[in-house]
Length: 127
Image (cartoon, rainbow, N blue to C red):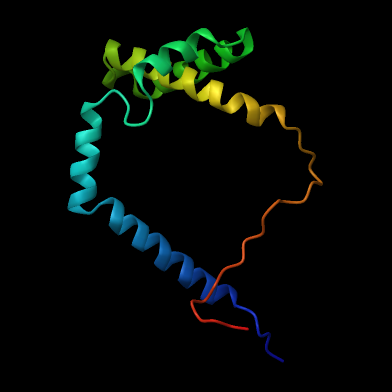
């Protein structure tokens, strides 16, 4: 007796196709030009003023998290990073930490059900 749902094999093929499509978009010549253009800016989405104020709003615990993350990045890539890049990383990490604060306040237990459920589609209208 065969199930009317999607098989693991079909789901895997669909997921691989979607991933390959996304990858091809990100490494397209247009995508590469945009990435190299964005590297020239400080940050494409975060202004330097926001980054500066983010660092001043951190709690001591958040500051420790930022420093730990920065130390790990420097441990991995320290030889490749200039002093300016390290300062920029600290600003980005501080900004990200302020953005994560409201999310971390929300408590979850292991038994809590997810809010959304993944419902893969085969591309056909199955009703």
